[in-house]
Length: 232
Image (cartoon, rainbow, N blue to C red; front, side, top):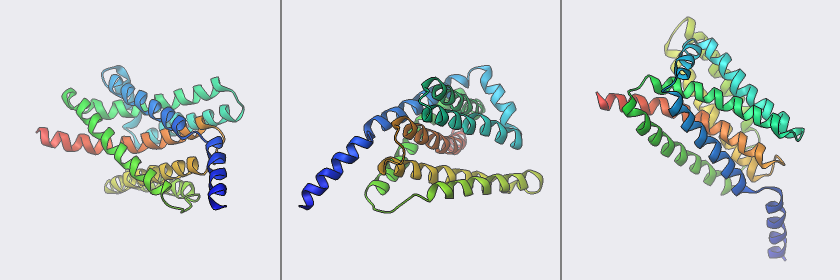
């Protein structure tokens, strides 16, 4: 009797979420954005990114408008069944991460950019895989982790703002909080796929894509720092 019940649950789950489709879309979006970062680092986009993200508050504003705004626009489009609007939102997210990523890459020698992206991709992939294993092999609810991530982002912004005016060391602490915020958000988004929290696989994929890229950006900065030290 239990096996029949389990079979029915599996069939219901399979009909509500297509995990392979979500993973495929999210992976494609991440791959395209990484490529755009690399290309952008050799164009004036990198200089524009440096200007926008050289100031803490302007950088936060740019991030909020492009990535936060793009996520909102894409969700609005999906909710209304309007794919052009959803696509416009995703494009805005891609622009935001491309500006930030190219600005980070342009500060490193050209010879280190591809290796840095490769190493970062592997580390981010392993971290994401680890989260997937934890989420799918436990019965723990991660429903509140989206709230936790928002709290970490707010705390990160506050720490960075104080650090900007008082103690630059707080900027490092802010970066750690932002990183943890994205890791927490990624955990929630993966759990949301498992629990079929959103009807649209595109919504699931975009949520994972945004979180993965946030993690990727922070790891990229650290990898470039380490590779630059080794290169010298």
